[in-house]
Length: 441
Image (cartoon, rainbow, N blue to C red; front, side, top):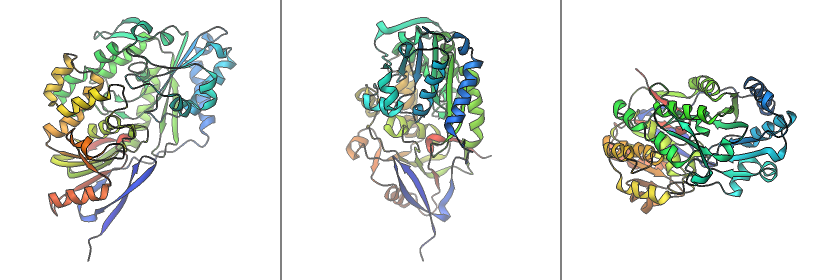
């Protein structure tokens, strides 16, 4: 008689892959807890935005001739900008803001620029065609404005269109983040609309914290321990962002809540609201972890999806274990314009200690090294294997960066079970990018 198996569906792009795990070897499945969704998203967003405009004083600043810059997240995020931005524009126009005084900036940070098609998908055709939409240009120093320096020495340089606006508003999607602890909030400023120099100086600060914590990432870690986060928030203050609209989505990308306020109170309220729904736990560390990214935006690349999973699974995997990463990687290894440089660093795969030295010396940008660090930690420090179930990357491409390829999650699991034997334990995390792993006592 065949042993009982538990079927589990893992998100994979816009589809799913089913894996069947032996019941006796399944240590647990880490699902985000069901969060109540708002019955009328447009009504909720409008009310929250109206209250935020009043609370932040924008209703008193807004008038004909006032210049507005709306900084929005890019194609790598599932922020519902198609819903948020039209409401923002409508409410601003009620206050006297004219179309010709509104600029939309895509906060790509160091990612490659969003294409016109991606911009239309992000904002909707009506908004994308009605207003000027610019991508951040981190290496175009003439368009950057130096506004000051943080207490840690980060030069605050942001795009001129953002810096010179009279009203500055950003959008964000709040999830656990392996560098800033949680995404959104002040991140729409740094890295969103910042210069390369500003981004490098901020992002390099992760090295000392991880050396002290002895782990792969800063997932879920907030100030004061996370100085990357506190530094970027100080930069956002210096840059003068007036308001952010930070949203929470469930695993089905339905709106759970929205917060519109100054970036610190909005972000902290969103994090505290969402934390109980995304904290997950296993009773023990496992030999094999199957982890989906769980968000189609993050599945854009190995860089985005992989780092969000690898940055948390070290809390669950035994040394010498196997991670089966289910990540579509539809744009390949990295969606940034420096994808070949990132590929070369992945080929070299420096140790965590080497990465800390290289990052502090600015020989590698912190936006790349913090991601590389999550892979290096699993491969070098924990001696784990990483098997990637992907469409946008093949066996040879993954092999050259020290990873393995599988077309489907089931054969990858069968191979791992055969290697570890009948006593192997298995954990499953279908929505790895949307949860915050903790270990039970």
